[in-house]
Image (cartoon, rainbow, N blue to C red; front, side, top):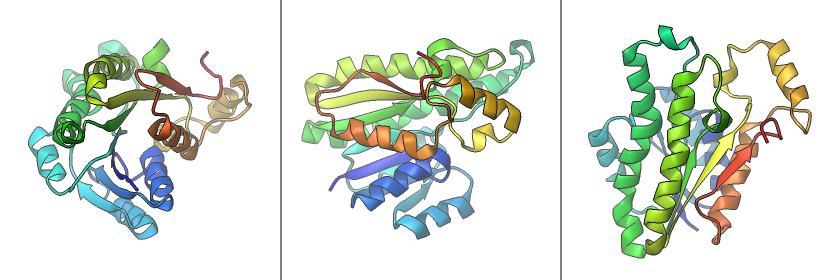
Length: 232
């Protein structure tokens, strides 16, 4: 039984991961920022421990990890997106995307590092996007942050490997979460048809890929595409 910490665990992919790992008998802690109702629903369903924390706030992250007695697996799922033309992206929006999607990883990895180094063992899983691999029109800022997540993951795998710490990245495709709430049903259907498997993904599809990476002790520095073959 491992202690698993998941950021962005109150909804979507994070909530599915909390549910899966709690069912498997792991001790699960999850961080969330705003949605207290959703967080408590996950707690009631899974028995996991919820901690309210903005991962972009380094002091808040350190305080959150002080409430966690140990860390074996760190899943960095917290993320926000933005849709719009590059020239219309406000600087504050650009900064907030990087603060959450990239700096949040920096804060959480540093907070978990003492536990990992003490044991000389650990598993870190970051969550990027297929748009971090190939880019997307009208999602320049989001694509830039997710590309940074991939590069950071590969660098950390090399840096931390000698200390027994594996780092891998998951790049989801079109997953049916709140991020797709503003996408029309017609567009979602078209995207499903474009995939090799003829459907869009579910949060549990991504959670199962996370489960594989936790157990795959000879896998590190990899980007696992969970996109149904939409991007090859």
